Image (cartoon, rainbow over all chains, first blue to last red; front, side):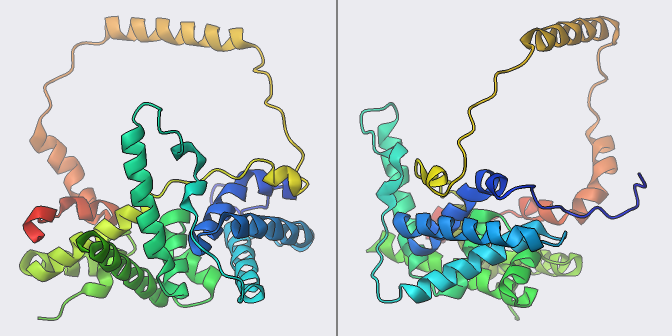
Length: 178
Length: 137
């Protein structure tokens, strides 16, 4: 094989593999955006259904870009569908932090409190900033990948990530002071 | 003085262009305000990245129709054990036959890696001396 030849990223063979490999990240993406474990679980189901339908016509290219575009579109559709349904952050859904008698329980509790504060601050961000920082800092996408998924210039991604972090920092500082 | 606020996140993420990195590093040397901003943005970035990856709810994948895969038995454990034994013997021979290393010459290391480090965008933030959180407050 010629080493100079560009390699194309190919999709996993089956939607089940997509589910096993990416399901957890899709769930975390949705959970961090909406703060609601039930809605996040619904979104994973919806995304997997779209992946199942879409894999047949998938063209080799950036699989991550394709998958996260599907995930984002599914999330936005779901938000529009449930606009009148209230959501509330439920960080206590993180089961492993619910055992107070385990060793290091104090540290784990402190970490869970901090996690709740960050999640609450995240939910106060305008959606464009929230999705930008979640894609960057939680999912680990590059600016170029985010730009591709959201269909905006890289400069816009740069600005949204920065402003999102700035507001989040101010919110956390206010909570700490108050 | 023109501040570089909008570039600071890109700088921390290794997403600034090389000319921007040069500009930011130079600016941070002179601008106390932007050094504080950089620390604040970095604190938010670290907080977000410290959020744990939450496990999928049990049965979510099964409910979505994904077949449960039982963990595969580890085949031929003895092959791994034999490979480890061979590797250990090779390391022993190599250790016996290798002369003790020369003392590390920091000047040589600097000459070899200094230029690359200066161009390494990802490494740039590590070179900055930032004020501590206490100093800012």
